[in-house]
Length: 431
Image (cartoon, rainbow, N blue to C red):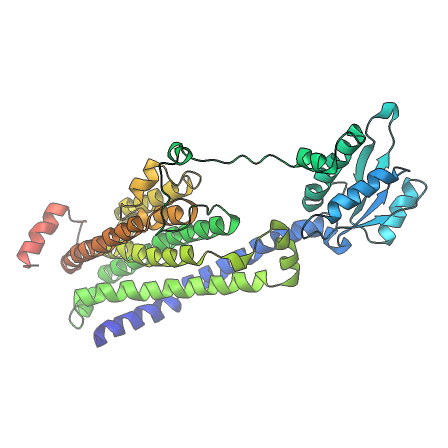
């Protein structure tokens, strides 16, 4: 156990101190910082709408009733932050000057039209466009005012409200519509398609993919480099190959956790900045609604999936004598991780499909597809448990197989051995 801890500590310190790790971590953290600030930069360079607050002017042109209807509709909306200001300018130049003086986000002009038609409405701003949050509020308000204008008292307020409320199209299956299917009671909730669930699932799937690729290649390249430089021959005299393999896998795993921690802190600090909180508020994201069950299952599948791939990468790295041949040797594992990622990503809108159900029980793809089913689909607890059992069983089996390959491969030099040659070597070494 002491030797295992020594190998873990040596691997961790050796990787963390390398220039490639430091530069890659800082560069990715910088890219994340820039990415989080993109909405703020866009808002900053499109006219400084944020500095204008939420005040909007109205130049009604004598259409007082329509102006009152728009204000009443908007004020009745939940979490409304828009404040209307009456403008008194006689012409366009005066209205523009008044809007700039009061630092308005923009103003509405309501120009009467001939023939009894609904007046023409235009939004005037410095950028010449309607902000998305303003558009989402003003559009239904104008539709409601137009309906009242056309009906001219023929409909009640409740009828107008029903007329202007968008129709929501639901979805259900044949069995559910007939009342023959009982939703799972032991597993996660079925109605989970909300922004926070989607973001959590997407981040966990992406995290697993990049971890499997980066840390797996890191393990394989370290084993191969030690073998090609003949350092391996010295190491196996003091530490057994099995201890080396598991020490490297756990050490690199800790390196990956450190890198994830750095990224997490970077994201948290940037999101807590005042200007970013104001910008992100427009996306209607509530981080207090973070799905803890999805996050918990995701971390479990992430850790188990990592060890499954890491052990295989270590075994492949042990049978390669030159670093130039490593890329070709790990191609099958790269294809497996790509398949797991793409099946999950392209099936986020159909998590209950047959492909997703089958993939969630395949150990090489379950770390991504099962998370998608838990977070965005309908799944029973026994399915999650079965997938975990199969994944753990696969880790033990491939860990045993990787250990046998590793103990043999680190002593074989020259061209990459075939599976037949590996079996012969295992018998010769009585492994």
